[in-house]
Image 1 (cartoon, rainbow, N blue to C red):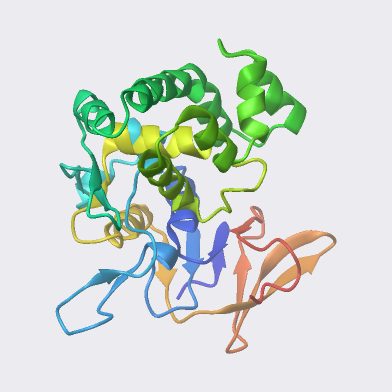
Image 2: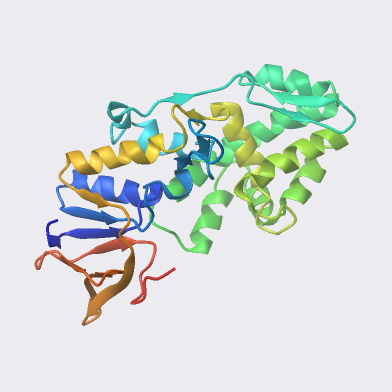
Length: 296
């Protein structure tokens, strides 16, 4: 193993690998260290039940990332490394205890018609929900893929949309408030509240009010976006970029401590006591931990 690098990334989940891939493409010498036996983090795919049967251990639907420049503009060319997505039809079916069910289809009109079986008013409300998201999604997307802004700037960006202060109110509402305000029929309400749980946020907490809009609109636009070969296909493609650009990725390699001198990261200490240091002229560190102690 080489002993000096421009960048050391602690962790090989998909977020860390995105960082590593862009840095490697920029010509920097990158080392990725992962304490687990496989890369992937929460986008891993493993044989959890029987041999030959692979399961996504955590993330399965890669919906949000579809709007990222990584995939939207194919900036990293991940298709060259085998990444391919399926867009299921129907998107999902939600069964209820009374033996009824509600189905979302990739075709927007078909979904509207399905909701109308429960409530004509709610079908119209769903169309309005998608229009409201269309009015503010550009502001939200810019915030996701730019350096963090001050809260006041983020709110000002929402206020500047065609929905104005109403959009700010949605931002501070809870998902429960949003759903109850927009929909009247109990099955429909249950469907959109369940959809709002996709990020594992408590739906009665203030600040979750945009989840019924953003998650539902994402599913309507991109279905339950499923990577061929399982969730692991994304990190494997990103790892392909890193390696093709001369970077190295090592598993079973736990970072215990970040070496800091004069306020700057200089390298890391591994669980086995080995030290990996930065190139003397380009010290940098990337990872989830920015303190002296990198233990989780």
